[in-house]
Image 1 (cartoon, chains in turn orange, brown):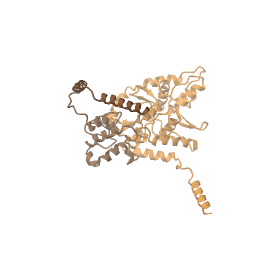
Image 2: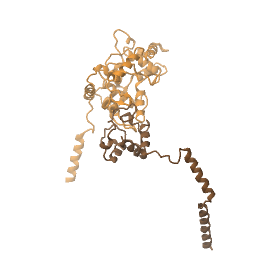
Image 3: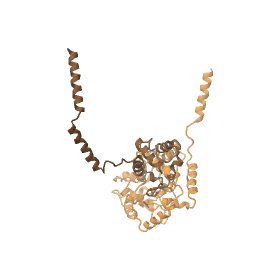
Image 4: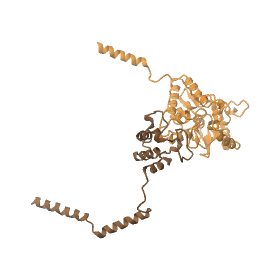
Length: 286
Length: 140
């Protein structure tokens, strides 16, 4: 009798405990995340965080402003415009697949990039702008682009440029599937990985703004609003997942694929944490 | 019959072995002079082997092994980072050298959130390299 009683109590306790993890609350996370950075860098105006290290390192800022007089990503924007507006074989254009796609350069300036990435209810997955561009090409019988550089980076540069100033506005709806992807991205950000045992947060949050040799680490608050990027090191414009790969490899961790669900989840979390910041892409960085 | 053969075989092999050990004086002299020539090519027979601390400095400076200056400043560091504390007064900070070694081997043992890579535990360095870096760091 006693044995059954104890087992029953234990079973009840387990059932009452519910899921092992605490309830996912993106809004609460967002406030904590942004407060951490605004407290750590109190002199930085909030909108300036989109400029990464240039918002916290005056020397680097001077160099950056000199470069911005002849922005190295300008040719990419021009090429991107041609790709966006050039008719397919069937007469449609890339612009036609997107809300306000034809109006990006109008006075209304609706922007587009600020809504990405988003949770798609139909597929139950997060979708990035790169995915939607390629889906549009596929749906119209055109050859898809890559995910990292070349044509896709040019189109991303064009769209980002005409979304400049728009505030990042990623939505995480109260849908368990969306919340699960958000949580997956959050875990990637905070988990230590690789032989060198670093998490994204280690360098870009807890020690954002510190010096690694002679380089200043960028704060994660702001580092999703400025893509795609012309990196001096790459000598061309590339997309965000290329940088995620670079960072994973840097800590000697196995990188994930461009356009992989893991990086989509990370981009979802990362960009959500940048909500409210102005888009500054395409941008130049070291 | 078998026994005798066996004993003979053992005796024969012993003779061969001992015979081989005792080199002729001529051969011995040749070996020694070659040895002297080899030593001369490396700067003389008095050249000292690198100390563990000297080896440790090389491990520390190499970007693919220690790369200590990425996060720590110390005497002679090139463009050091500041993520970690400066490496100074090490004997005072680590009176017990073994504690310093343990910190290099796995800093997360004391602080799970430490940024310092677990150089020994994650096989970034060999055990010998950890010893060498410890010797070098201890002298800072």
